[in-house]
Image 1 (cartoon, helix red, strand yellow):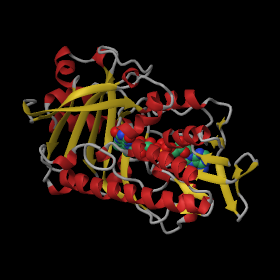
Image 2 (cartoon, rainbow, N blue to C red):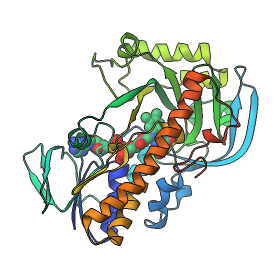
Image 3 (cartoon, rainbow, N blue to C red):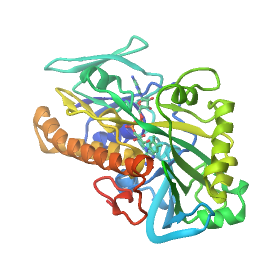
Length: 390
Ligand SMILES: Cc1cc2nc3c(=O)[nH]c(=O)nc-3n(C[C@H](O)[C@H](O)[C@H](O)COP(=O)(O)OP(=O)(O)OC[C@H]3O[C@@H](n4cnc5c(N)ncnc54)[C@H](O)[C@@H]3O)c2cc1C
């Protein structure tokens, strides 16, 4: 089949590699004019997120991710109050994107190719690009993320529901941090939970993808509640006065809000963690949304990753879900002769995965942000795509 994929981030690229491996003729259309860059934000790196790179691209995942051995919790005085042996892997968005793009290659990866329209018939599906070009294919895969144009058009009733909080994020090179901080935070995911909030900290590869201790970055994700309206709008107005909806990238948060997050850190966090936030040069913000839909396959079109259902990040499973959608799609196309049958089977399994994740991450988020019932021993707070730990 000829396959067009809209969106060349981790979800689109993984599906592109898998469908090409299965013998399809695949092209990816990415809106950004330059290779994507999320300035190295950390990601929990679950098995589904690295399955392709490990099993098909022969990449040694130890070279692109950092393994941690403990889950730790601190109290307000930076004292260790919980320590459990548990292995996780962490990587950075850039490292995973670059590894996947290197494997796919750039011949059929089209930058500066924003899709502005699409249509389908019983015979084929067409996309129109902003530059006036039009491309016809047998299958269209929407991997265009949280603000998906395809979802908006195919499910006009779908809405992004603000969860009531955002993630303040940042990372600092180990070389800029104290030896005490690195020693205490470098081999673990470390939490501090207090009423209405939680922060988690873990090591990740640096901007060049280096994973050796000393070269890495220490990354934080701090969930903070902002009521919608004035307070939220003030936070989300960037340094150029632009009101943003989904995120403010590094370097674009207003000076006042950079000061605000640092003084909030000094007031609310244990010193070990406030030192990290204060040392962050360009903290940035991602808003937490839920997007729920009941259909992900529409004739010759399917929606994968965040273009379908968006779950909160508390299971560290966003890229894993996007990748799993790609694996399931390749398998369904292999198994079923008719495209309709393949997409029906694919939708049945992947809607269930996404809805389960959405419900679980809603519960976990509520425990820390609103109910104050987060418990370090609660199995549900363990990362995982299908269930905690898996
Ligand atoms: C605070 C926070 C923490 C997170 N932590 C983790 C974690 O630890 N682990 C994890 O796995 N995930 C995590 N995630 C989630 C993860 O980042 C996303 O789920 C994942 O990036 C989704 O991938 P995607 O390919 O579906 O979409 P995206 O990465 O959003 O990519 C969509 C792509 O489509 C392109 N595009 C959009 N519209 C068009 C168009 N019209 N034409 C052409 N191209 C278009 C965009 O430019 C973009 O490149 C986190 C998210 C947040 C907010």
